[in-house]
Image (cartoon, rainbow, N blue to C red; front, side, top):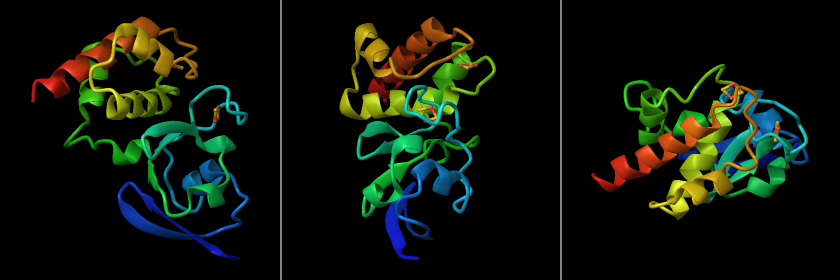
Length: 156
Ligand code: FES
Ligand code: FES
C-alpha cells in the first residue's frame, strides 16, 4: 500500500494506508489521535474537525491523499494539560463545556478562526462555529470563551 506523508501536529508523519481512506479513520486508527471525534460521518456536525493550513475541515469527509504534504493539526496539537492553548483556558473559565463530545471540533474551528482573524467579532465567531453542532446547548458560553481567548492572546 502506498505511504502518504504529511505533518501531523508539526511532526513529519508517514502512514501506510489506503489513500482513499477517510482522514478521520486513519487519525483515530493507525495514528492513535482520538481527539477528533466521530459524530455524523457526513460532514454535518464538526465533531471530527481538524485544521489543514488555517482552515477547519471535517476529517470524516476528507480522503487521506488530499492532505499529502500538508500541515494537519488535531486537538492534540493545540495544547496539553501542562500548557493549554488560550482557547482551552477560556473554555474552562467560561464553563463552556458540558458533555464535551463536540468540544475538540469546536476548539479546532475556533483556533482556525483565530489563525485567520485574531480579533473576531461575535458575529465572526458565530459564523466560524456555524457548522459545529452541540447538543448540550453551550453555544453562548462558547462564543464568550472564543472572544475571551482572542482578547487574552492580543494582550500578550
Ligand atoms: S463526524 Fe465529521 S462532520 Fe460529523
Ligand atoms: S458540550 Fe455536549 S455536545 Fe457540546
